[in-house]
Image (tube, rainbow, N blue to C red; front, side, top):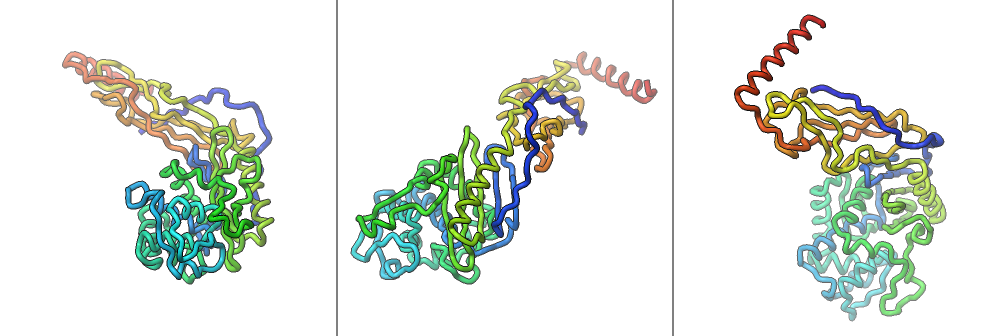
Length: 381
């Protein structure tokens, strides 16, 4: 494989250097969705008690059941004595009630209802214990490496853990897989049967701020401290973040706002290669054409820390010459973008057009030319 360093066109005007973020959270993870870039990671792979933030996994299971037809939003579910007697945050369902799945989802998201979680868990799996086992197994298949569930609510239980990274990746999956239900996370209040009106407000503090926030879930227990899985969108760019272990709800709100502001102000998303644009032309071996354009499927967007534009390096890596025949869309190499302080971004390079194999005369001519090039190289000319 050969690497060809590409000359970067002017990207941005000069900006102040990026400022490192020192978080007060014991665990934190910040992720730029558009460019798949981890902006910050602090103890992000350490399993911790997730408190009510693990309700996101309960919701994922419910949304999947809606998607595959096991549930409908209009279905009603019975309220067991166990659900009714749940402590902590509640939707205040009672045994005589028959809440709809839609109401229960809002009860989980807006009111953080432990009782609503149990109703949904029992409705899907018969018992909460069985549902928790299903949650754990599904989490493994989703790639959540540090998640084990003992209940549907996040109620303190030995061995009930998630990592900050798992929580953040789960948030991304909810946004990606269930856009039709994700809007519930932005609801600021929900009244159920006009019971306990003071309990109708969403506990997520960033929804009240003018920062583009649209989710997701708070959590708090004495052991876990105060935590939040949050997401915000500004100018079409989405950031997801997780914080945990903060000492108060005020500290959680302040830290969350600081993280969102930092993520959007200290990094900019730049389009290095627009979708469909030819990146370069590569030599072809024994084809009807001597060169083929290389392009990308969706273009190349990268996140660049402020003040680091002149340190970005772009390399096209491919075998040269590329042997014919070549079909349009064939992967023939990769584009590697190196940005200071972040992981390399690798994008497949695709052939922009068909290049059939040359006929006999063309192949003979190509072979002679190739031998001539090798002779020149060997002579050091």
